[in-house]
Image (cartoon, rainbow, N blue to C red; front, top):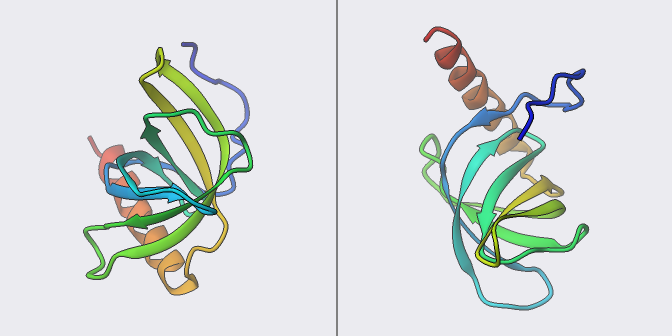
Length: 120
């Protein structure tokens, strides 16, 4: 896969980070477990065991190491791409209802991660 070399289009910086996420389709379904590959204040990338159509809303519960409580949020699928045929998909989601008090904490955490990685 070629690395994108164009202008940055994201509104918020993105950091590679692994957090446990449980998710389900908003209208129905049981929870499944995954983990993030990267995250920003605007959304995240998770691995899933099925392909989701763009626009599908997933209800998520996420555990972050910098807050005590689990964070409940809804994400809208932007893209879902097959990585391992019929088995693993990378699903990009944008947050549509991230709690505002947590939004700021997440931004600070991502900034710290990016600063840490830039010093290596």
